Length: 327
Image (cartoon, rainbow, N blue to C red; front, side):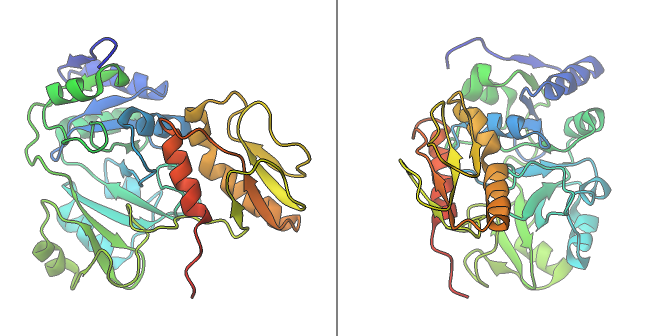
């Protein structure tokens, strides 16, 4: 990995304070949890979440887990039904992630939700993670601190080898006690769906809330990686537009947007792919809402370079343009 190696610091009060200060500035910090080391950024910041995707070379905008110090803190951003309340009571803090409906005033970036109206949340048990969450005062988006597709890190040295200068600081919590990612359960309708097995077993979850469906059953739950079409605007989305048709809004990119749009949003006038990623979901929602209000017929999306995080942007645009399921 090119660039200087990140600092690995013992989790003293001073190191925790420095990590929180870096997060405030939009930097990324690696923190230990009981499962694996996480690549943490401010979950409420579009730019910080986009930096996480860029650092991991993540090929898609899969939803990210937002980490909280308590269930009460998470309840500010997502809605708990009785099943979620019971799972939180039994297994939090701990290695269980719940995918729950976003509240209307949810603080978490839509980019972390992959544009969905749900959000994955967890309360980690690790003492260092808890101290950083308390010091920072906002939720942290923290997928595993490795390049996408690589083995998840369970030691601080693994993070340094994987990410190098892409992470500003690594808090050393020693070896992770569990070493595999959290179990993930989606509670978005009548069915409880196990999206990913983990340290909290299927049997333990079923003992708490009853039968579980599995990924691919009971329809397609709107959770990590489960839908070909994630948040799709109501207006049709046309990709790779090189000219505007009558009555279309424009999703622009770069310094030369297509002329003549009555309604437009430029993802990045300077052609910065990370800035474009940070704006993507908000742009789609704004163009869809305002375009429908103005009676427009669709949204034309200019081409985005298919490199780096641009691949993730294009993946998300293809999903947003995918045919809707027939209800």
